[in-house]
Length: 137
Image (cartoon, rainbow, N blue to C red):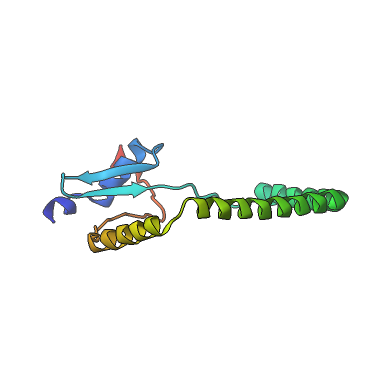
């Protein structure tokens, strides 16, 4: 545990600043354990985004009203094709199964469950990282 204590918020901040473009960053790794920082983009809402979002919604609603009949016809055709696909997949499944394959699949699932184990994992999630320029430089 002593080695992990070496990782301070300042050390993480330095790693984040130096590798800020990467999605995942390994901040600790000793061969037996590692800590990985995962980053995802979070967008801050502002007036421009809100206005653009409203314009998109308004224009989409107008196009939906204007093309309602054609959209309804397309949805009906999609439903027909979806039903036909489901029927064909069902036929395919019946051609690919037999009592022997069902038994083998059951044995496989049972053996796999009996030989499974829980493997621990760790992820570190940061809500927000603020860099202190004087401690990072």
